[in-house]
Amino acid sequence: MELDHVAVAVRDLKAACQLYERLGFAVGEREEIAGQKVRVAMLPLGESRLELMEPTAADSSVGRFLARRGEGLHHIAVRVPDLAEAVAELQRAGARLIDAEPQTGAGGHRFVFVHPASTGGVLLELVEAQR
Ligand code: CO
Image (cartoon, rainbow, N blue to C red; front, side, top):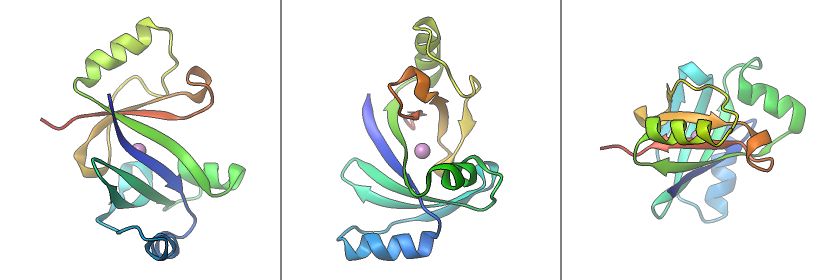
């Protein structure tokens, strides 16, 4: 497993990008992911990246997160070579998945989320490495 990205929920993507640029980060690609009702910006960090996410709707999962907890760390994502195999392994281990069916996210990557109840309180995303 490798760290793919760390995602931060923000209310205002443009303002957050400006803030991180002032902190010395380079802001890369931006993308809107309609299926998850978010707009994201990628800030490259070596082989991984920081992902800033702004909800495009209050009733989205990130919108609800912001309403409940405010801005901050939303999830960490690790890259796995084979998502189906990783999901099977998690299920054997009794981990609770948010959605057992992989979904498609930023950059066309396939992913699943593991519930924080199974990871010591951190929302964990598994992303399939692109082949
Ligand atoms: Co993510």
